Every structure is written in structure tokens, then in C-alpha cells.
Image (tube, rainbow, N blue to C red):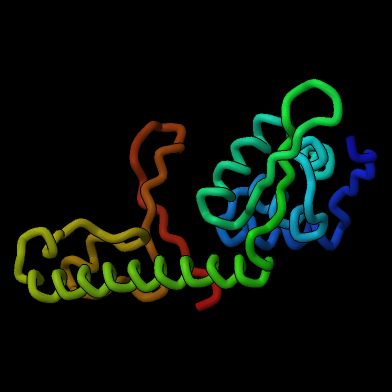
Length: 178
């Protein structure tokens, strides 16, 4: 068996994993990707120790990475009796993996922008529909807007139910910074 020279994620590598995680990559996947980029040809046990993840978590991550085509594995027979050991390595350079993540995020953003445009088209075509002519005040506005067509000048009204007499009182507040 190979000697146990397990390396751990340094602060800079943790930051890289956090950046990947911020892009929507699961944290465990990001940690394993960064570890594999730093340490080629490792066993799952070394990944467990280097990323501080449990074995079942590493197995789940490795299945995901294989499905994405980002890693490759080779099976090696154990020196003595026992189960064969899988050795893992990145199938692509980390830069290519980042490029594929970027393409996926751009595609997703473009799909969402298309949905927003469809929504805008629907709203503009349906502006005479009853659903778009609600007379309910919008957050912070009062019935004055409905009557006059515009909100009161730099003020809004709020119902204060905390009065000792238990009755509803209208309290007028100024909007700060206007």
C-alpha cells in the first residue's frame, strides 16, 4: 500500500472552494475538486482525510463528479488480500472545469432572462385584464394613492394597534432621507 502522506486544504484552497460554493457548486463537491486539483492520483481514503469529509459524503461527491465527466478512476489491486482500491484524478484541468461551470451559469441566466421577457410580453398584452387592475395598496402606500393616483408626499400611514384603549389609530411617519 502507498505511504500515508495526506495533505489538507490550505487557506487559499479553502477560499477557492468557497468561491466555487458561492457559484452554486455544493460545498463538498467544491472541496473535493480543489483537493483533486492540488493532489493528483489519490484514494478515497486520502480524499476523506484531506477534505475532512466522511466516506459516504466522498462517495456521493465522486459519483457526481464522474457523472459530470470531471474525474477518472483506476482500480488497483491491494497488495495483500482485500478489496481493490480506486485511485482518482481529474479528467480535465481545473480551468476547463471552471469554464464548463461558467457556460452552465450563463445558459441558466439566459434562460431566466428569456422567461422574464416572456413575462413582460404577457403583462403588456394583458394590461387590460382584471388581474392587473388591483385596487389594493402596495407596500407602504395608503388608500390616498387609489383616490388621487399618487402616494402622499414623503409620508405613509400605518395602523397602530398597540394603544391601551385597544382601538385602531392612524399614525403618520416621515420617510427618512427624502
